[in-house]
Amino acid sequence: FPVTIAVVEVIDEHYQAQLNSLSLATKDCTELKNKIEKFRCDEIEHRDIGYENHAAQLAYFKPLSFLVKATTKFAITVSKKI
Image (cartoon, rainbow, N blue to C red; front, side, top):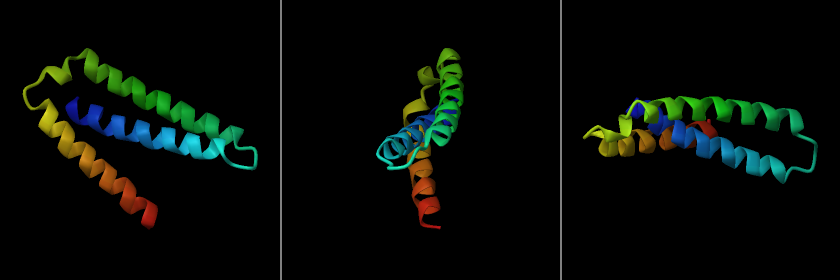
């Protein structure tokens, strides 16, 4: 669960940034925004399951979370360039 939580928290930020960008769009993006919001809610549900199972209480949670978040952010950055 610690890895899931870390990945989902980064993905949540990514989805929120996409929603913020779409809010500034000049054309109607309602359908796309609704899909992203649904994906975001699904991911948040996965994160919450991890917290409910006390993943944050594990001794290695913080260092593992830091590493996974950094790796996930790097992967998102690379995917934007491809």
